[in-house]
Length: 145
Image (tube, rainbow, N blue to C red; front, side, top):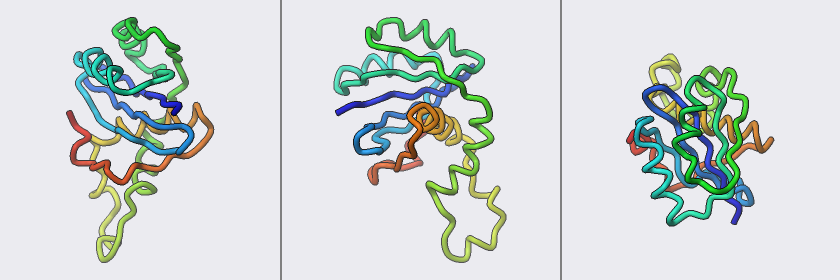
């Protein structure tokens, strides 16, 4: 299985998405404090065979890349322009509003804490030029770590 880890880097928190290319499916999607990213990725690589890491070229991408220097496979820096803005639209593709909630303005449903993980997903989708679906076991309430 060909797995990629995508990271939306940030000064205080990072969005991470782990996906299987062959299945076009996201297996993990979280947000983690930036200072814990190396520890989390190190632990993740002990039980996941990650082929590449794709890091958005945002503000702290250089620092995040340096923290991941232990990863001996390919690390790619990729364009992340407008991913946070695009994440708001992608959020509703992933979690459509149903029932009477449709009458309430969409902005009330966006959980900003989740946008970093969705931004990481957009970076991955742009890199791979395909859309991914979420594994049914992913619960958005567990995205913030």
